[in-house]
Length: 97
Length: 97
Length: 97
Image (cartoon, rainbow over all chains, first blue to last red; front, side, top):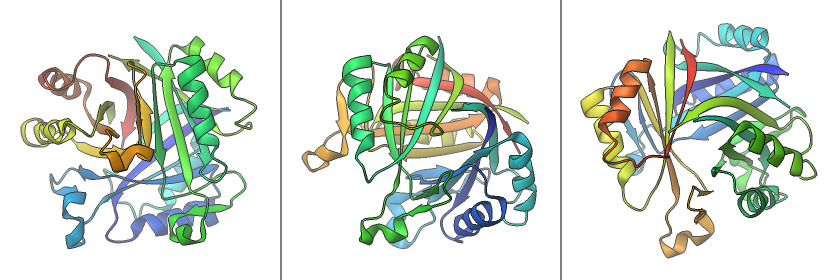
């Protein structure tokens, strides 16, 4: 089936990924969710997030990836926009089998 | 060149990723294979796979990603369908250079 | 907005990912860069890169992912082609919001 894949780019510090994950899992029951930890990253702010600073409790990138029908993905993204500010989501088309 | 990217979502417990990896590497010689470990995930069953349970030997998500021509990717997926049950594969188009 | 996503597949040993990351961050100021570490991989050479050999200082896969407008991504890839040899980059289209 045709699916939409969403990748949400957040950081570890605020435990946002856990709250996003819980909502996707409990409320939206999307087809699949995987969380990845990056080793370095930066976003629009240009601020670095790097594991070389891990000992300082630095804020590593966390990527919450999920997929489902386009409609369910859009509904889920709309429902978590209080947790995820604009400018943090990539979406693309894929086939699921 | 145009390629097809496949992402296979399995878990660590059964060492399936190693068997999938070996076949892709030895038998199918696809252009590139990378395995990623996720920190949390769930699939269709809704069952959680989380690193917070790592000390209990819990079953973390493993993603086997590979790419090649559409035909080679389809042949490889057909050939590993005894290892990977239906409903675990995303595919999408990309350019390789 | 429409964006191009680029994924550069290199290995950890030569610290190339750090140099690529610095240029993308400092010189090109692309919209987002994330580095992932794989647990196993192989590329065209067929040579394995696996964390089971980590104690030997083996060379793990590092994936530098970034995105921006198609033009900025192409310019950035052109500018790092002294660091990244041909045959190491996937690109695909996505929407950023």
